[in-house]
Each structure stands twice: as structure tokens, then as C-alpha cells.
Length: 579
View 1 (cartoon, rainbow, N blue to C red):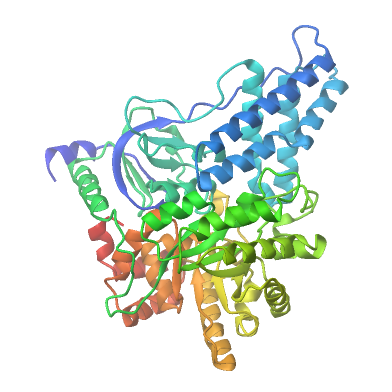
View 2 (view 1 turned 135 degrees about the horizontal axis):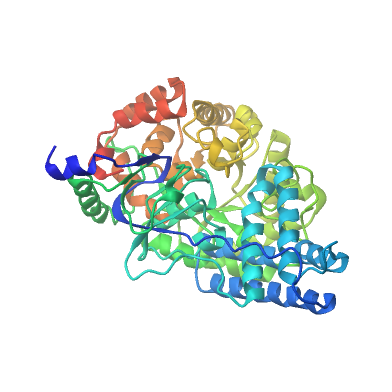
């Protein structure tokens, strides 16, 4: 150890969390600004309840307009998040609750608009938290919107990412969706949070932006501004005052990341076994970027974007235009369309019930067909019409399918619309356990590992304390993946038709886990366009037999940590590439 290393090793603090996006970077920390201060309980001077109510309405509209404006300036997942947050800003439940509080007053005097919206936001957040599951995930959105409305009422800038003259590592307890959606990767070079989980907004958008990130790392929100730290997004560690060895690691990773900047557009294992790498997109602009990145097709088109921020169902013509923009980017190639995944964390006024006691287990995805018949049929009509105008090979899958009967019903709806390749999302454990019968009814399946993990482990994917459970490396989750692939093989033998199984969840973007998924029998992988090159580089170093051997080790492991360690030990290329 040289003098530099000895000096930095005297009292360095190291923080451990969950690595959610790989990369090794060095930089100065900037903490997110402190939360908006709580308003006083009562007004210091006389207030008019009617005037204060109007102030609340005006402020909420201004916040919604500001968020919509920011959404319009960006594309992809960030835009979807901002649109959803804008909906929350105009939520009548929040505004009406605040106005009721104004009218009620307090024993100590009248409330201000600021105090009323503050208390109303707290009340809504508590109700959502008590519901658990996906509705609990909306708590951060509500509190973020509350802070923005209070800032608007005070005439102050909205809370957000700190300004800096130089690139920095952003640290926080957690980040609001509206903040993560508009991060500038040229300024923010890594994300570290003390809370959150591997499937939180922070984690998902960090992966989409290609930013090294560590979540659920207690204490990182106490690091002083300006402190130099080393972040290892693969290992899940943050080290203060790094020495020469870690500085060299960051420099080496920067060189390796540059070398991984491109994907050749055709992926295969070392023995030539083809494993197509597809992209997850939400809009036509996303699809163009994915095509430019070399994606071999689209493995997940999230159609929710057409429906967000709408009080009424979009017309068939509007949907045809939106889907056609994606199809046009991939002529002659596969585009997998997921039908509307509304409900839970994506409520829609014309389709879902916000008063469900447990929305994560409620009417969402395909189940909305039971309560709002016709919406799905019109969507399938639009998909078929868009397909007729383009050359893409369109496959269609329904989310939240739980039984073979539901799969058969969806296949019938697709046939009626003229769609030839129906499929299902495997997110509910029952679909994995009965995949041999489910897949006799449809042409393919795609594993949504985010929800499959959450349901299998009974662990809210937004909760930092449960991050170790909500990990797709959990052997139980991997067993469900294997059961799905094995069931597909049985269904194929029974029908004489291929029944491919893909993965479109976040697990596909982890290069090490991608090897395991292929070894378990997964035929294709879909991910953010930024992950294509790294996943391809690692898959190209193993044969199918080696992938199967590593998958067996992961299945046999006693924990997610042990499974990950066993596989990484068998993939030295990960260390070489800084992954």
C-alpha cells in the first residue's frame, strides 16, 4: 500500500447498499436540498377561506402545468413518470381535502392555504401507505406534489436537483419521481440513496440513463457536500476519500465504458447460440433511439403512455398513430405490445377504482376487462390497424394473466381483432406454476420480473428495508423462471408449436443475471437500449452449456447474495469490464 492509500485508509467511511446500475465513478457529493419546511399550524393574520381555497386551486394547476411542460420536453420513461406526477398534482382528493380543512379551521385560528395543503397531503399519504403494495408507492409522489404546491404558494422555486458548475454524485434519502425523470447525465454522474429499493423509480431510471447507482445504503444522506467518494454500482458500495487504487479503478471503468458504447445488432453466445436482445420502449421516439442502438426488435411496448393524463379513453385513431410510430422504427422485426397495464400505481379515472383496499392485488392489467369491457377490444382494434399500415411483426401480450382460462380469453379477443400472435405476461406466480397449460392457449410468454419478484417474495419493491427480499436473484424467483421455461417446453411438445419465453423486466439488463436467464431457458431478453452493449459483451463469452451450469449454481444457492456471488465468480469478464 502506498502513502496515498495509507492516508485514505485511516478513517474512510464505506457505505453498503444495493447496486442497481453498474459503473465505477469518482466525484464530489451534492446532497438534495432539505425538504420544504412545514407551514405554521395557523395563520398569523386574518385569512379569507374562499380566497385561500382559490390560491390552492391555482397553485395546483400551476404545478400540474409545470410538470406537463417538463414532460413534453423529454421522452421515454422520464416522460411517463412526469405525466403521472402531473396527474397527482390535480388529484381532486388532495385539493378537496385541503379546501375542507380551510373551511373547518382550527381551535387556534384559521389555516393558511399552505397549511391546509400540507395537512391534506399528509392525510392522503397515510391512507395510501395503509393500503400497502402499489398504492404505498404513491406516497412519495403525493409528498413531492405537496412540497411543490407549498413552494408555489410561497412564491419559491420548486424542490429539485441542486445546481452545480461541475459534474457531481447526487446523494439523497430518496428521489421523487419528478426529480429522477429529468436528471441530466452530463451533470449527475451517479446516484446514491439511503432508502428506496432495486425496483424504485430511482433504480429504474438510473438504469435507463446509464448512471451508476446504489440504493438502500443507510447513511449516504449524511455525507457532507463536496466530499469526494467512489461509487461502485455493481458491488453496491460507496467509499469516502478514496485512495489511488480506487481512483485507478474509476479511470479504468471510464475507458471500458467507452469501449462498450456500441452494440453490433446481432447477439449470440460464444458457441453461436442466438439470443435476441430487444428494447423496452414507451413511445415512437424511444423506438427510434432503440433502433439506432442496434436493438433486434422491441420486447416491451408500454402502451400506458397513450392513456396517461387522460380523463377519457383515447380514440382508436389516436392509438393507431402512437403505436404506428413505434412499428415504423422496426420494419420486418418483432415488436411486442403490452396491452394497457392500468391500475395500482397507474390509476386511470375512466378505468380503475382508486378506492380498492389492496390495489396491488386488485383490478389491474387484463383484469380491467372484467369491470370496463370494451376498452381492451378497442385497443386491440387499434393495434391491428396500426400493424396493417406497417411492416413490423406485431406480437401482443396481456399483463397480469393468472390462469389458462384468462389466457384463452385473451387469445380469442386477439383473433377477433385479426392479431395472429397473442401472448401473456408472467408476473403472477400462478401463471409460472401453471405455464404448461397457460402456454397451450397462447403463442408466447414474457416474464415481468419486477412484479414476479414482488409477488413471489411478498415484498413491496419500493421499500429499502425489504430490498434484499425484492431481488430478482432470489432463488425462489429463479425457480419460477425455470418453471415457466420448462412449462413452455411441455406446451410446445403438446401442441407441436414453438412457445418462446422472454424476459422484459429489469432483470434482463443485469449482464450476470442475463447469463442465468438464458441458462434457465429464456429465449430473448428485453431491456433499456443503454444496457444492450454490456449484456451482449458478457453473453458472448459463454456457451449455452456454461450458462446452464451457472444457472444451476444460482438455483442451488441459499440466498440472493450467494446466487449472485456464485455466478459472478464464474464470469471474470464482469470485473474486466467494470460490471
